[in-house]
Length: 265
Image: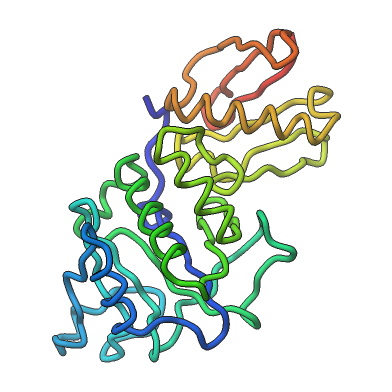
């Protein structure tokens, strides 16, 4: 079970980064949807002048109509920032995976993909986020100019091939893609902490020193623990788990349940 209240539903969004001048327009998006039998464009505000149809937030305001509503798996998603209107606001990016440098607004233009207002209250529910990520994978497979995906809860930019392969493997029953849908940072006291895990379970992970003296080994351990915690839905009481070398690890949630500390017994 999830330990804490789900984060704000607007955190359940991602950004599709296209090369400058290569954002698709509404005709390209409709052609993309027509190629996939499980996907449809269910609302095009360009055919309705009501300003109230415009989504709040990224990518312009009333009368610009630079968005579409998409239906996948019975769920609706808003795609904001389509050409020729303004791109979505470029996201904050702090981590990168399978990319040589952090992407920036000088080289890329963003589209925002997020749950529609009718399902936004579902927050970080697993069926909703899985469908959102599956839709992003569809975009990667269909648009060669899509260079990277930014997952907002972890502020992580993920190269197209790595995103598609890791996400597809997870959707097919494989391990949770901890590198990308979460990230890891080293703290001032030498611990290794997750970023973005709280979106999924309401808690972050902290691998205590000296267990994380070897950064590579600690990251591998973090990937394994993130997968374990996502499957479990979080941690409400002390637990024990065997490390790869057979030693025992202790897991303990903090008093406010916001942080899970891990150390070798």
